[in-house]
Amino acid sequence: MEGGRTRMWGVAAVLLGACLVFSGVARADVYNLQFDGDATGLVLSGLVSNTALTPLTAAWGEAAPSPYSVTELSGNGQPELLFSCDDYTADLALGEQWYATSSGLSDVAGDTSNAPGDPQKFGLTGVWNAGDTDTTTNPDYVVSTLQAYIAAGYIANDIMNQYNDFLGGGGDPTGNTLEADSYAMWQIFDPSAWLGGNGDSSTELDSSEIQMVNTEMGLALNFALNPANDTASDPLFSALTIYTPCGAESDGGCTGSLNASQELIGINGSPDLSTPEGSSLATLGFELLLLAVAGVVLRKRLLRRA
Image (cartoon, rainbow, N blue to C red; front, top):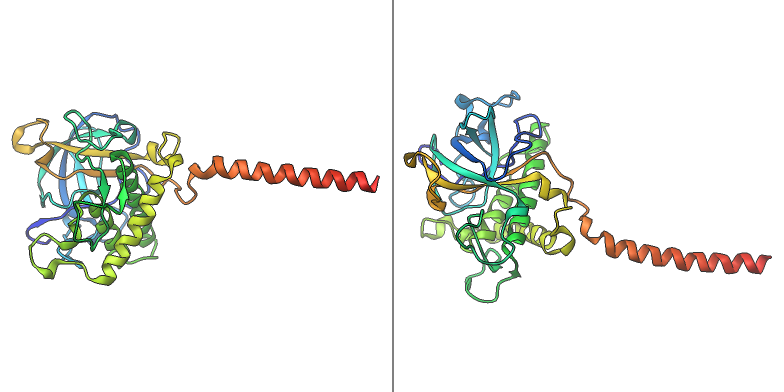
């Protein structure tokens, strides 16, 4: 929020006005990142400028919708970038700097733990929909840690596409879709995100907002729970990079502190996830069966005519 600490989350590691940057990011590299502000406040000139970045006032609850802009300061020649954040509870101040390691979906621990040495920030066993008050038993989705991050990547890709639509004049960057998607990603890793963080009902999502959040969560988690998408052959595996905090600026480098800042998710390009590759095996088997039956029927008809 303007003038204070803001829940950060932005879209994909993309150049504003282009759709891909940060290609070929080396896994486990350490990056020095700086939070520049809310990218939806940019003057839409096709350029990213710090002077044009202004944090939005929250439209839902207490959090402004994505995307947000981050500068990579590690000397790798990267420009300002747009990212998503899966981390609702960590705060981020305008101009704040921190250190983060990079990893991919193939590096994420597939179990439900978050053991020391795991590259990602979170480990979990289940996901609860927005609006649920019992978040200790009976999760709405039983997931592995890897599946949760696949779902987060699915949402980040959705936001990426929506923001590009806005750049082309086809969308509103402060609209409900971006807000719903931001809360959907937060809700995956924090079952109380829908309640807000101020401890009063004014920050809670209302019933219509909760429904929109849960709809996006359902799409993302059902995608992740499809066994065929839980594989390195899925395009999301090559497109997604996770930037996990490992040290504050005052630490002078990576110290292993996961709470130093927020965890970010970047999408390289805009992978087409509309048709999950996973169902292809089952679909192919069914289609081959239909072809075989059709072939038998056609052969019989030809024999009769002969």
